[in-house]
Image (cartoon, rainbow, N blue to C red; front, side):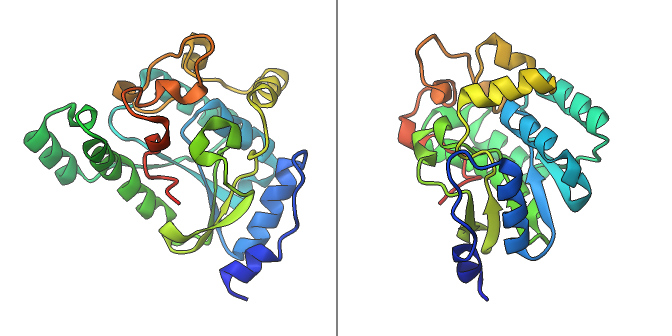
Length: 236
């Protein structure tokens, strides 16, 4: 059975489906090892807590772009210690970062969408490809409520951009409130920036706090239109 047939054969999940059921179905569809992508946002840490009974069945990886916030590193250490995780860290290729900064400076990503995507490719997308090498599927904390660019996602889908891997999005239907309530109830480690008005956290120069009433992704690449606000990790 090819990947498309495998995904088509997975069950239909209602909006109130247990994320663990989605994970189990996705892992079965992958038919091989799966890995969980963690940026140490509240969504990803909630997902790690939800799947703690399955930690021996998947690895957890993170991408250090070289421009993360100190608060992100703090929660990363806390998560690793609390859950006993050996987080697999990936970094950009040194030569590519050096060349970019020599040629275009330190803030070229604010000059155009193309420049920003170039920076994201070097710092995120290329390391992601290495992180996914050898895996049959990967797990994300993506949710439809996060962005207009994520409204068409499915709980289990084929990631054609990354070689046809199975992509599993267990929290897809959860609202912001569900994520926060779970985090409070289960006392999961939460990035301090979330409490400072940062609902979405990326690289430090590309993330700011949002104002009351603003969309949660308004603080990411705030100089761009909403339809461009993806870094390339989840390109469709």
